[in-house]
Length: 627
Image 1 (tube, one colour):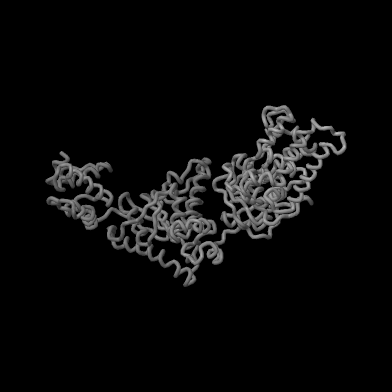
Image 2 (tube, rainbow, N blue to C red):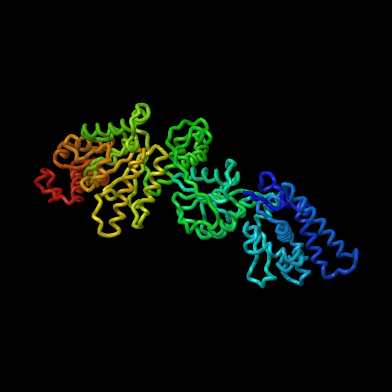
């Protein structure tokens, strides 16, 4: 926010970092440089001229300096790069002259040498003592710790010296800006960007809260003074805050900082100091009052409404509204869609996967109904899930049914390991054209209090953006029955279950929970299940189909009696698959076809895994395999 300067600084249109041709031709011609040169030359000659002689050399030097000062003040009335920076920083006449001398001496080594020679110094530098003698005593006050030059991070002092010997330094970004170079300061955060805002706000400091990041930004900048803002996550390091303040000053912008429920101490200090800028502090939750800067601020609460048609069109043009994107998600997709050739579905999938893949494993479904062998009643239940998901728009939108509490769909798959719960989930996703994200509960559930809820929130927020299926395997470890509170950990474990129930109620997508132990599931969760499918160990006919399915047509066979194996051994689909693969490897190692001995050996290996002892009498002619 450019502020009102003194009368010597009339307003300039649209403050910005201006462009200038490269030196050396232009720099000496700039009014700020000519003023600095006149001040340095006069300083260097002070001890050599007769100050009492009328019309002498000192009078001529004074005249040159006065003319240069008048030219500098005249230059400030125009939108030159130097005038823009001085105006944006809120500099008065003295501070402007100090900035001119400091920048010129920093940019031109010859000026520093003149100063060093005049003071008998070896090291060319502009010091506080030289500046005082060059201008007057008020010049040093322009470099006080809370002066506009210091609070704008344009100029600093090397303070590990005696006060009069302290050296005045100018950050390189200031010089580069005056030379027309727009390169980004390396100290700036990598996520920083510049965005325009609609005019109309007047607040110097806005504190905005709300669930959606972009909605917060829009609400904050609507109330803050300024039409251009730097957007960045609030850093922890002082030098990064300093760089943000300097950059905002150079380009005449306000600053929006995103903080995660806590404003760093360095940030509070810089916001308190940099009163020449408009600030927006954006946080999902309310910040503690003691962390807020000690200056007047306005509180704003942002909503989380979905984008309007106008907001969608502004960012994605005539792309159809095929995804229920939040404003923040729409913002991300609009910046990524070009990379995917205008394919909004691909951009949305990328949006979701980028945040989910450190919490869940992505499965791209490839298997369909023909790969799934289940009883007719269970298959019908799976088809009902597909129909409910596929026709949600008709029921809720066209027919006006009220989703209670959301239009999401939660299915529970229960049953022993290897009975097809994961495969059925993949088949559903394949039929509906969804990607599956299998949640890794070891990364979601944290021993640190509050981290589990944070991980769940991030996961559901990301999943809400795109067409995908969330699959919680072994879900009883997260949604088990809430326990009696005997210690603090029990209380927080119950909070985690309650939080998951809350997110499931508000989630509009498809969730599949799988468990081997349905009796361990919390009753409150069971009441929120829309479809329950109880998987079981397959019957004889299903096992026969599974054996045929898991022995490919190209695999060589030698007298296999699959019906006998299906009748004799009660195995799950996963066990049958493992046994068939083990038999194939044994046959390949022997250099022949897959025979009954290989198949029975594979079966026995699977049974040993679960601790089942097979008696020779159960094997008939294959009893020798266990003798």
